[in-house]
Picture (cartoon, rainbow, N blue to C red):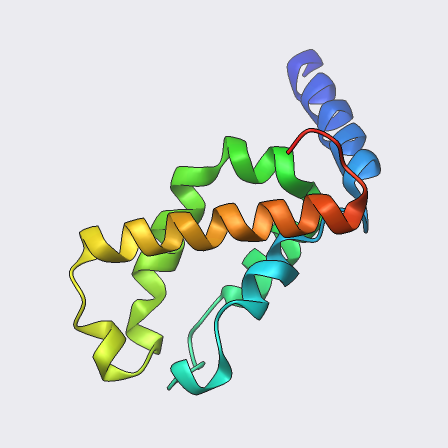
Length: 114
């Protein structure tokens, strides 16, 4: 129980530090144009956007593999030309998009560490 309490404290602290300052999820969503998305049904992208915005750039860096995997799995919602790309290429592109989103969010949030 004590470990859970410490974990919750650290999560709250991260949320307070990053709340509404480093909106990485919002920045990432701006990089994916509406025309590229064919089907939004069954997509949990909004929950990922909110989570990334809530926790900020440091959390996104720490959870980079999970975010990239989510993006790769979500390619089924894109137009056919993007769905047919190999996962390895999608991972590279997703990593670059995430890098760009973190830099943009950090600059607009006033963070100095990226």
